[in-house]
Length: 96
Image (cartoon, rainbow, N blue to C red; front, top):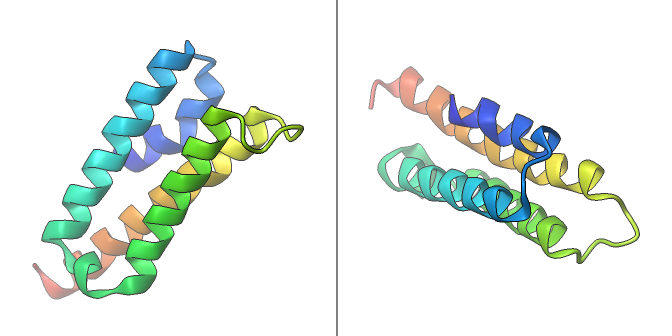
């Protein structure tokens, strides 16, 4: 469910504080998932999640102006979701 929420959150037009809480919760869950799953041994998965978190945070902070947040936030959240799904798929394949 979290990868879906991470992808949809920027389109929900929430208050800025709610977006930061959504970002924090998603990043926390992604880090926990990486810590207990196969992502901890794969730099590509960790890098994908970290890049997504940085892009999404940068978007919320306004670092990518004049690009609209409605474009940049989904890029970051899709990267996080992709890393989480990749890690879950590897975990399922190895029955971890």
